[in-house]
Image 1: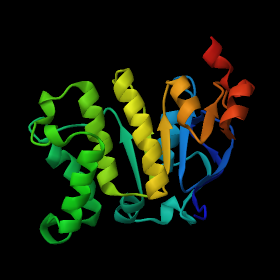
Image 2: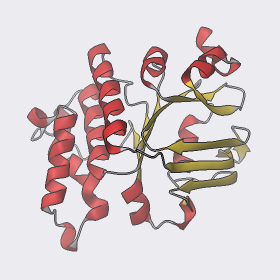
Image 3: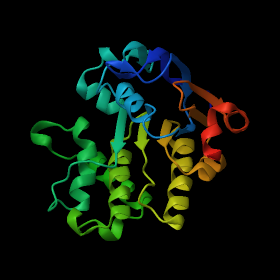
Length: 240
């Protein structure tokens, strides 16, 4: 299957008033799982927000499917890209199925009705994340790890080209972390999309990533193949 450039960063500098990074340049292709590694406070979440169009980069431009992210309407953007932050606001009484169904909102028709396609996408997302048995459980009754899987299920139900997951394994134990990395690897292969996963699980990133977006903690950011990243000075901080 031919690789397509789904996301492009051109001379991007991110930050709030003051830059957190130097210029970032990369092309991201369909079928890639890209792990984002870097110390806290170096701009990883800010880059995600800039890619998602939630904040503007201080400099440069971001292209989604060959078009500037600024040119997309909110609905168009939501049909092509989604971001999962683990600190989502919740309605505690909402059930897991109801929350996952929010991923279909960008495709909703009159009065937000759900079509058969929507229902199938929601069910598939629940099955893929092993949440079928939890579907009617209220969100407040879930553990942090279970809730993390619900956030990801909602993103999967949205069926976008680019997924940005910010620390999705932060509350997961080892078996569930392994399951999640394996699931996400299969998703990018079968759906041919691009998935960014910010993580501190360095060993899992080395094992599952196709490439590494490395933050060196000094403002420099580079997208590299896995071996190059771990042999470079960009990841010096993992050794303490």
